[in-house]
Amino acid sequence: MIDVALANCVTLPEPDPDEAPLLAQGDALAQPFVDSVRSHGARSMVVIDGQLTHSIRKEPRFGDAAESVSGPLPIAADDAALVKAATQGARQ
Image (cartoon, rainbow, N blue to C red; front, side):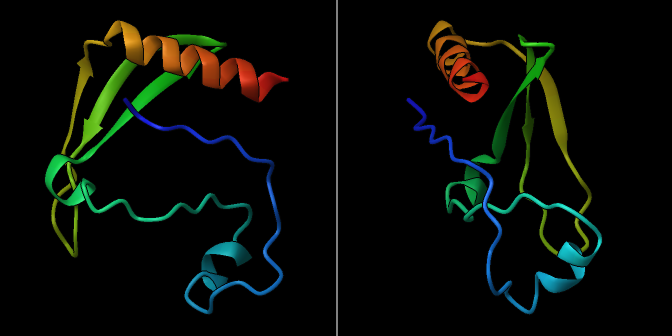
């Protein structure tokens, strides 16, 4: 099971110097790197107009490596339930 945490948008008082060029371009979403991404990649659940439509998997890309995305992938019932709970919580 995947843990999901929803939080309000916050403005960091002092951005990391490496993040300053990105933040100068506009809003950005940052998240901690999860080490399992190195070996398993990252799966994204795609929600359009409140409906879970499909899932994709992105393989890790480091340096100048080519991007690798596979999908659409099947969505397990427990994953669909998790996405439903997360999106309902985000709308409240």
